[in-house]
Image 1 (tube, rainbow, N blue to C red):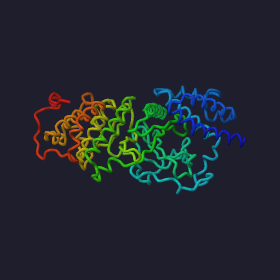
Image 2 (spheres, rainbow, N blue to C red):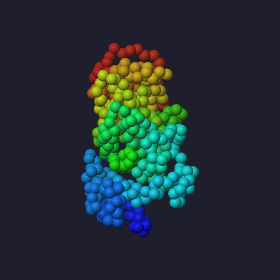
Image 3 (cartoon, one colour):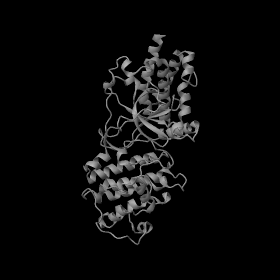
Image 4 (cartoon, rainbow, N blue to C red):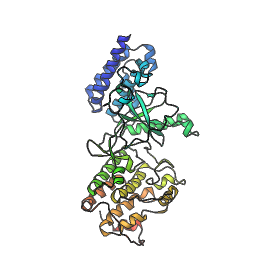
Length: 445
């Protein structure tokens, strides 16, 4: 039996390390080979083991998992998800005893010191405690949770690493998103409903294509116990927030970063999902490529989540109780305009020591808050102010969408690159008798 388990583990490792990357690239031959190996693994498992991992059939298991995972995803994404699910469940079952032991007791483990510390720029202080639902072993699926990272919307984010990589200081870490505990946070929502919503959002996020300006969605397992989870890439680099705080930004760099953010948002919107938490500390310039990359999909979804967002950047409909949930696309455009103003001027568009006052500022204007009006008072910045104004309209239906924002800013960028960062509006300005609608008539793209 021990020999069978060693053989099964070897086959599972082959599926994950050799065939999964090929399937993610769309290699049809790799998918065919993976199916044959998966069926061979099933033949080596006992009846109890097959039942424990809840696999749909003894033969054709990957194809069955693929059918269940298809939903809105393209073929190769669904195939990768099916293979990942199979490998994870297989390893949990055949090596359950190993998974239950703490890292220091694993064969070849070097203790906690061997786990590479995460980049300080995107990981909150380590004093955050694990939720009560986390098993004593800290294991979820084929991953060990290291620490909580953030919480919002329907899920929480955790820093994690693959169990098979423990003891390897160079192994990459990942981010896991799991649904909230309904009993602790949303007592009025049935657990089944919350999990169903999470699965729907996980499916939507898994549909996001590979893109240099988005943290990569690696896989998800909706049948994992005690909670389903989504696996995301941990992006290492420098946050935009740090550049702004240290005032190391240049005009060329600011424009490039903003274009990267728009490209990432456009890719998300093309699959029907909004980010809903666009802010400087959720934009990381990759250490390897220099690409501005959106991270933290803890709030992401198809519609705005009421009272969930950063008060400095979130759209007015997030805070307005009178409105039904709006499309996430318009909310992302609004948040981007706030981000763009700060990136180009070094100043926060809506600022106050009182968070409720900040929210009131969002609700009080219709596209021309004071900071935008100050920019508009300078002739060379008038077009920039008009572009941002249209994205800041109070009505979500009247805002410029992300793709058009990228086009408009791209046309204007050559005129802005030679200006000195940070941009400054006029010191004195008077309220214009014109509305944003009038500005739209005078603006020439």
